[in-house]
Length: 378
Image (cartoon, rainbow, N blue to C red; front, side, top):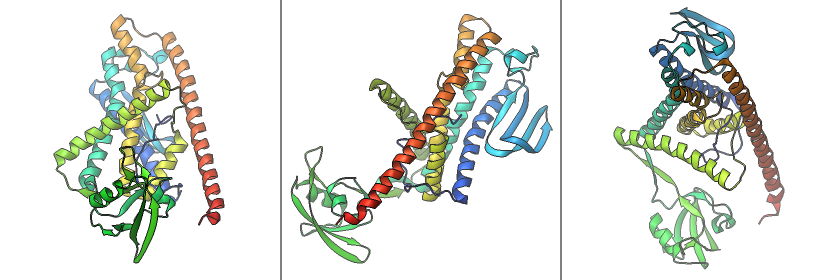
């Protein structure tokens, strides 16, 4: 379910502005297809393990392009490649006949295993993608080269015209060859002028700027180093991948808790926002795209665990209550819960889409304002 996704803090190296080329469209379709199909495959495999008949397992939606029936299951490839779905027999409680291989004929704990399998598969997918990127690219560590990696918005370095990629050669006439030495010289000057000599391409330039006071009572100009990557063992890659799964889940919880505590509007993205950020990552590089798919997979798995009716988490709550009370779920209860779930999910979808559109409008207005002001800047 991709109606809501918190991607506000995805720290990827992606360019501003979506570029919807053939490659980015394919990347978007692949992302939706992979994340949703693997989620549904989790439900499918556990249904098979606990002997629930699966009537259909579809790759995509809409009209069937290719299909084959095997073992009582219709496997199909459909025209709209945006995920897929699995249909267990007796999934609709109102149509249950009582056959032993139907979904609602199974004990509550087996149905609980089925609903948890979808989010679990999302986390397994995310773990595999994170581990693959980390073991291929390496562990990111700050570079000791004096090449600027990023420029802080509004800091002296940006105001003075320094840009990412500039190599700093000296600070107040002292030659520097390492980031630590350069940073030490700048830190020693709190709200004082420093002379920075730097190289951009083949050209050497000099600029004088006044440092700002940093949070640790040091002088700063608002620059950070680039990133180097070091090769690490498969074991450490797996450990780091597991941490990434935990980190993005915990970040979502903390962000939502902070929004609630401070009565702030949650910054969530819907389908439009997801398409936009996947398109950007597709143009940034293959590793960024794969890592982003991992982040999205974590978000989808986490979102589906929320106790919202119609989602896996909502079903899980019902089945746990059934186990505690030893009372079977009735069609009337399911109908009421599903009605509430549809209303909640539609509300989340509308809110997320509103956020996406507002974000796009704000971004375009900011770019127009920057373009209008550019000729006036020195």
